[in-house]
Amino acid sequence: MADAQVVEVELSNFDFTPSTIRLDADKAYALHIVNTASGGHDFTAPEFFAASRVAPEDVASVRDGQVELGGGQTATIHLVPSAGTFSLICTHTGHALLGMKGTIVVS
Image 1 (cartoon, rainbow, N blue to C red):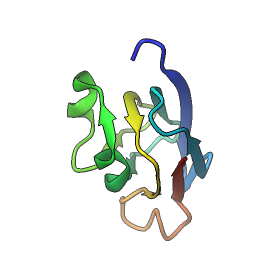
Image 2 (image 1 turned 120 degrees about the vertical axis):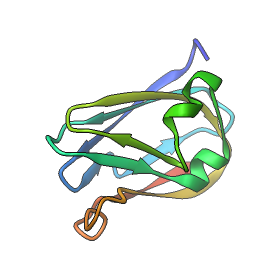
Image 3 (image 1 turned 180 degrees about the horizontal axis):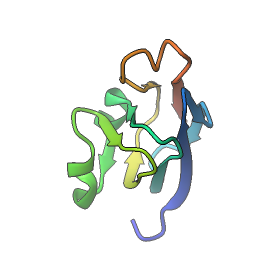
Image 4 (image 1 turned 90 degrees about the vertical axis):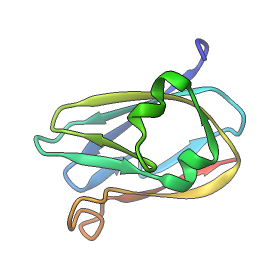
């Protein structure tokens, strides 16, 4: 996946930017997830990750469909997604209720 298109998603206090991530099916991506907050957040989208071919070297970074990031941490997940519309949330207590949720649209 050396020719993967980089897509950056920022995790801040109770927000994903962008909140709707649009990808093309069967195209290689480097999903660069950046936590700009001082506290921890996660990028949880189990159906999306299950429907994607995640690069073998990045599989360990995706646990039960989520990528956990401490304050200021980043992660890059190389993958090829399949078509579908998938929910994205932060599962930390109360974060989704405060607006930390989004959608991944793969067409």
